[in-house]
Image (cartoon, rainbow, N blue to C red; front, side, top):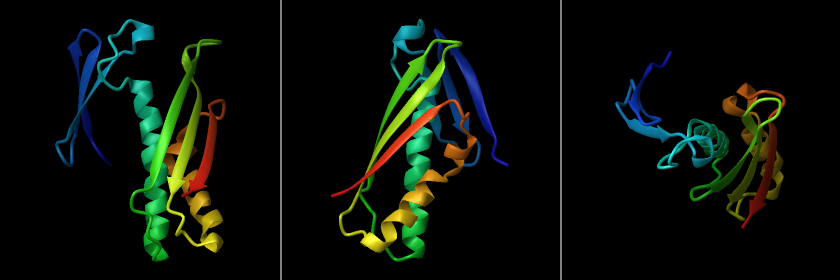
Length: 135
């Protein structure tokens, strides 16, 4: 169990404190929903959570199999929809991994990313389009 404390700061800004570490993050409503877009929106954090979760699972698999993936990146694009309600409609991820990743390990590495806990916690209506590139 992990505890987090979230405070509404006013003007559509919130702060969240991670219980175990004390680290803080801030959010703001996006410009298209009455905010100023001065920070991550709550729905932006969902995209960031998916990208970081996928990279973390890649890292766990890579560590277990002695594969170097330091410097891997995930570019995430979030698209909102308004019907039938306002929600995240699609998350597009472009994950770049070192070209040195052995070809015979790539499918398992990608599967690890696609089975991350955040991915498995998302609603089935949310489209996740993940592509992997080795450079």
